[in-house]
Length: 209
Image (cartoon, rainbow, N blue to C red; front, side, top):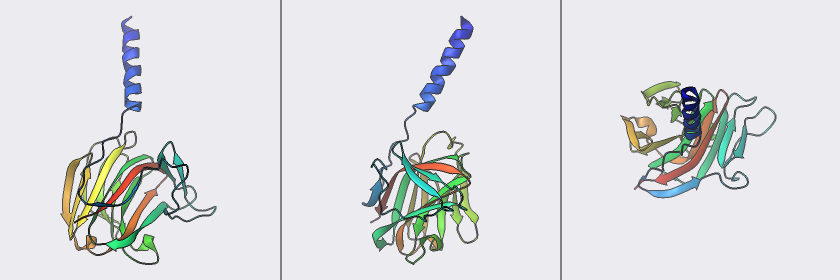
């Protein structure tokens, strides 16, 4: 009888973990530039990505955006703003459930968004969140949230104002950083993934006042 009770408790615990709701949206200040909860029947055409047999795959699955590196060297998708802005924030849900990391950030005006990035925010399955210098591929600052990001949604926010960066996870400030790399006009938002598959949801970008 005791053994059956233990098995039942373990089973209900698994069900509870599977049904755990994502963290609530953060109340960040500013005017909304774009928002997408990926609940539509097909991906908004404003999201741009490379196509072809050797390209990464992007599709809507159960109201989320599934990113699959497939035969590509990485999965990269971006969306332009109606007009460039200087200061902005982005928050989104990430779940790097079968990849090395998921990253996101802004890109500056130019013909190749992927080459117009200076920094991004990367999230690993183990819950490490880092601000990365895109050109040198080094971490400017990182923190281990100790969250199981591969199994549970993490809501991550990145605020860029002047030379100051603030990174938040699940409505808690993780760290701040000052760097000239975050200054300048921002033409759009770019998401990328490396090393497999992962999911993102509820992308929201705001213009800071």
